[in-house]
Image (cartoon, rainbow, N blue to C red; front, side, top):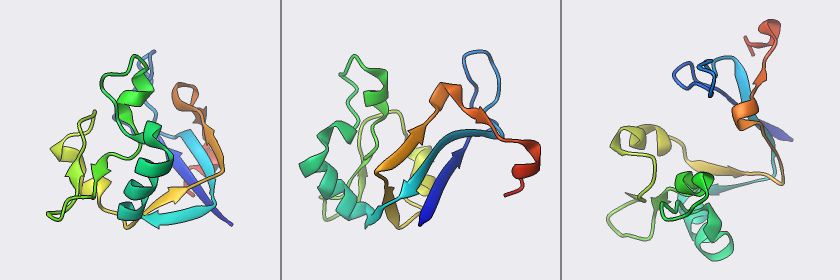
Length: 120
């Protein structure tokens, strides 16, 4: 069993001005993985709500989850959304998209990680 965790950034702040540094934003049990290209095809067919949609009245839909279009022969193109060219090296720095059927998202209610566990 593989576990995925996301710890917040010191450069991101909650509505009270507190940094997300040292706070758990989400945790998941990894149940599948796909190449980024395979994930793009999968989302297009099975989960289109994971594509960024700036026209939506629901802010989380602006962000999306599948932010690159791999259908072009010229390589992946960044979809319109909240990411920009600065994000490309990080966004495409990995090989796979990790999928989960057990996912816990804390978002703005991110959990403080005890100091003695922050080293892991």
